[in-house]
Length: 247
Image (cartoon, rainbow, N blue to C red; front, side):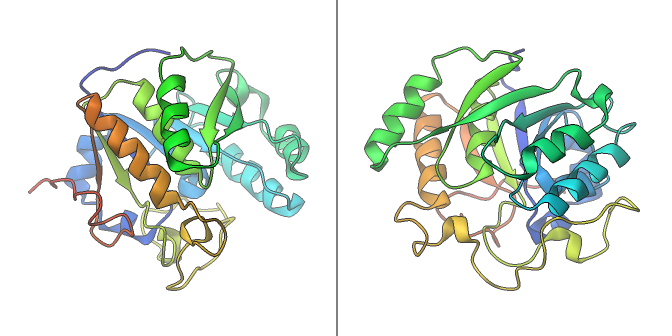
C-alpha cells in the first residue's frame, strides 16, 4: 500500500455530526486521505477508501449492494475494502450483487479478533503495525467496531493526523436529515435516537469501542501521530481532543 507520510487521514462514520462539516472543510478533506464506513456511501462526498461489511440480514446486504452499485461512477477511483465474512449470511448475497468492475481494485480482509485484556490488545496492535499489508488480502484487528479496522488501516498510511468524523458512538445517523445525500440510496442502519451505540456499551462487552480507540491514540503518540474527533458531540470527547476546524 502506498504510504502518505505527513498527510491527514479523515475517517467518516455515520453519526449525525457529519452534518456539522462545513463546505470549506469538505474541500480541504478532498485533498487528504479519506476513508468511509458502510452507510457513508449515502453521502455525496466520495472518499479514497470505503469499508463495507455484510450483515446477517439478506435484505440489508441487497440494499447495501444496490447503494454501492448506484455509486459505481462516483466510486470509480475509490478502493473498496470488503470484509470476507463467510460466517455472515449476507456475505455471498453482497458479493454476488456488487457490479464486477467495482471489485477490480478491492481489498479483501478478514477480522483478526483482538485478545482479552487492554494491555494484550495494545501489544497485538503494535506488532501488527510492523507488518506490511497485502493489497489483495489482509487481516485487520477488530474487537468492537468497524472504526477500529479503519484506524489500523489509517495508521499504515503513516499520517500526520487522523480525524474521526461522525464517529459519535451515540445518537442518530447523519442520513436522518436529508443533507448531502445521494438520491435513490437507502440507509441500511435506522434511527438510533439518543441511545449509546452497542459497540460502546459495557453491557455488551467489558471492553468498548472507546477503549480500543484509546489504545490507538496511545500508540499514535509514540509515532508522533495525533488522533482527534471532528465534533465535541462524539462520545470520544474529551478523551480525544477536537480537531481545529477551518474558519
